[in-house]
Image (cartoon, rainbow, N blue to C red; front, top):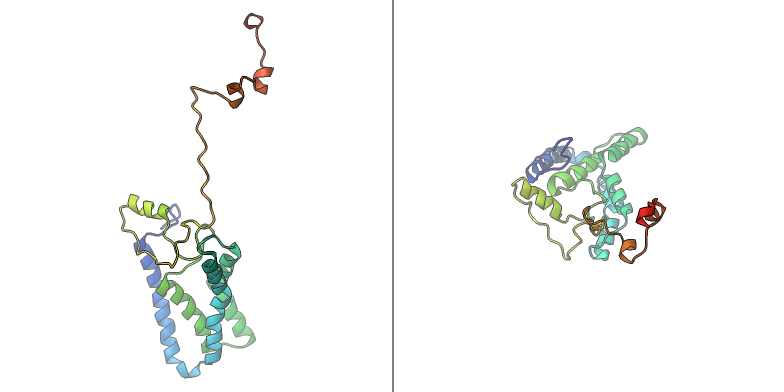
Length: 202
């Protein structure tokens, strides 16, 4: 929501999506207004190639894995292909080499639809490829006294966190009882062996 808290609540996420819904509506209006001027085979190709390269490989791998972690290459493919920067460069290159045309509206229509209609933004390496509610995020909402988002249904139960295994907690040794493993079996540590001992203590 800000620089110190780079996350979104369900309400701010809905507002963020609303901005893309406006862009989606504007793209739709332009498509309808110039329906007869669009080369539709180009429009369809530009619309599909984003997901053919950027989404479908990861979706297939995720389904085959049964919810287990998949390669981060799929995340990179998705993020690159669904980037406004990448697709803006594609549109610019197309205009320079082929020329501007209304079929290029397929690209903003696709990206704004993904974000506005479906709420799909960039994919984080720390999360499963498909949307899965994270317990940590739900606890954060509880701390903020906010309602949980609508759950997402899956045909299987993916791991809540897709790439970061939970580390076993390290035992905390009390300062009052600094017993080492070496001392427990009757042997001295190297540090204790090098410590000078007074004649009276021998």
